[in-house]
Length: 211
Image (cartoon, rainbow, N blue to C red; front, side, top):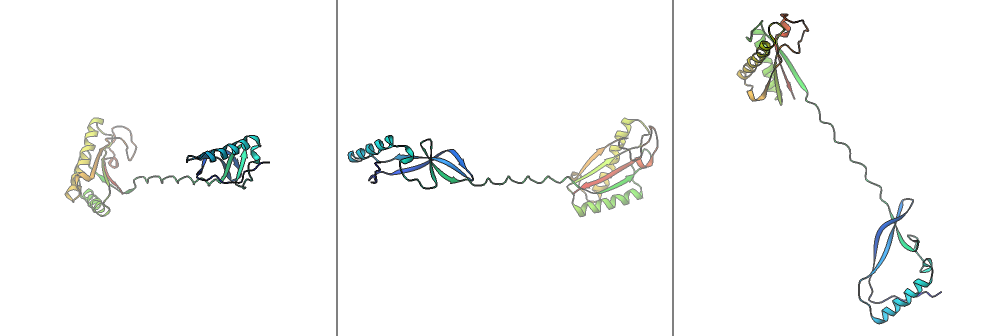
């Protein structure tokens, strides 16, 4: 069998890895192509013709002795390369923590009133001191009523109670911009009752803040 053993001068052969064609355990096989980058002389063209003649005449598996990392499949040359393990998926981001209620304070009112008595003022003092200490991001002041009277009237009364407590906090150094006011009227009763019932525990404003 004719086996050319010379090296063509002036010819640069570049091996290009092409598309994946076959797999072995832990490896993938990639096509190897050859590309001639420089022009060749007449003598070299003759050598190439001789080699091409040989290539067409002999089975492709007999062209040359192959190193273990190279193999032929369907007369195409493939190079074995290691397949790296895929990177692990990124860990999911932690869920944001919900706002935490640090403290709640209840201020109670006389019937049909927004006035703060001594006990109510003492509770406002404590709330203002804790707000100044913890510096919460949100302070909610929510007003409520009992079920006596009309619902529309109670909505406005609960708003007035929230504003009364907000004003008392402002007098103690808590800025209005730090407070969110809510008016719940006769909804969300602390003590469930029927309509038109005077219940002192439901006539209230609640201060609570988040950290």
